[in-house]
Amino acid sequence: LALDILRKLNGLAYLGIDLICSDVSKSLSTQDYAICELNCSPGLSLHTLPEKGLSRNSPGAVTDLIFNKTAK
Image 1 (cartoon, rainbow, N blue to C red):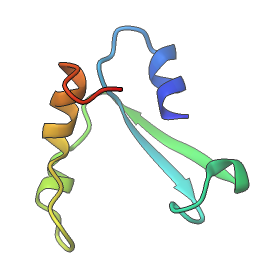
Image 2: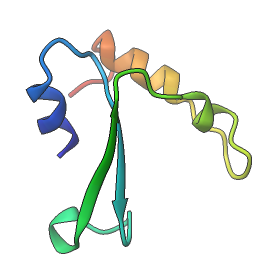
Image 3: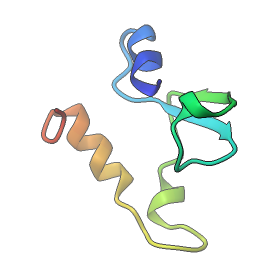
C-alpha cells in the first residue's frame, strides 16, 4: 500500500503515511483501515528519540533508501 501511494505521488523520495487499523501486526487485506495523513516531511525524531521503547534509526533507513543502499 505504501509503495503504491508513493509511486502515485511522482517526484517524492519518501513519504510518511499515518494509518489507523486494528492490529499493525496483521495484513491490511484482513482488516478495515484508514489513511489519516500523508506527510512529505515526516517527523523522524519520534522514532529516533521515543518517549518509550527502543530507539530506531529511521533517518538512516530513509537515507539508505534514497541513495539505494538497501533498497531491493
